[in-house]
Amino acid sequence: MPVEKKVWTWHSPSLNRPMSVACWGHLGEPVVLFPTAGGDFEECERFLMIKALSPLIEAGRIKVYGIGTISQDAWLDTEAKPWHKSWLQARFDEYLVRELFPHIARDSGGYGPFIAAGASLGAYNTVTAAARHPGWFRLAIAMSGTYDFDRWMGGHRDDEYYFHQPLYFLPNLGEGPILDALRKVHFVIASGRGRYEAPWESERLAAILQAKGVPCRLELWGADVHHDWPTWRSMLPLFLDKLARLG
Image 1: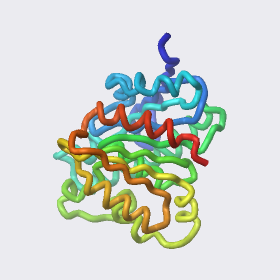
Image 2: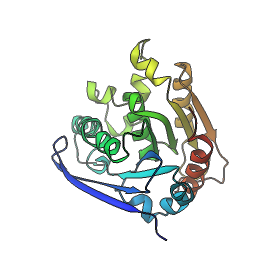
Image 3: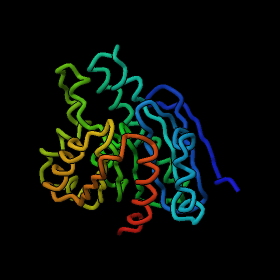
C-alpha cells in the first residue's frame, strides 16, 4: 500500500513565486527534507528516499515534508550577480519562517520542534535553517554537505551573505539566547570520502559547532561512499532510526 501523500501549492509573498510542499505519512515527528542543488519538492520521492524511509513513516514515527528551494536561481545561477544570490537566500529564509514552518506546524497538529535533513546543497540549507532558527528544530542531519560558497561570490561580501553563511556567522556568535537555543539542537554532520565528496567541509563545520558547545556528531564514512543518492538513502534512515528519539 502506498505511503499517504499530500501536496500543497501557494503563491509565496516572501518569494513572489509559487512554492509547493509534499508530505508523506499520517503521524509522527515532522522531518523537513531540503532538496539537493537542482532538486524540487518531490525529488526525494523520485530518487527513492521516501521508499527508504517508508518503515519509519508507516510506523508513525515520522512525517516527511519535501520542500522546494531557490538554489537554481541563486547560488547555482552563473549569470546572477553575487548580491542577488545572497538577497534571494534571505528571501527564502523569510519564506521558511513566515510561511513554511507555520504551515508544517499546523499540519502536524503542533508537533514540534522539527527535524531538518538534507544532502549536498540541502545540507547547507539544513544547517543554515537550524542555526538561524534553532527554536524550530531539535535535530539537524546534514549529509555530504557543500558549505563554502565563496567560490560562487567572486569576492563579494554583504550582510545577507554573512548571516546566511554558517561558516562565517557561527564562529562569531556570542553568548546569549540564540546560542543557548542552538545548544539544544543536535547536529549530525555526515560525509563519505568517495567521489565528489568534500569531507573537509564537514570537518570544518563540525569543529565550529563543537567549539561553540553545540551537540554535534561528525560521521565520516569510507572511500567507497560517494556523493550520490545510494549514500543518502543509507545514511538518513539509519540516523533517523537511531537519533529521532533524542530528547
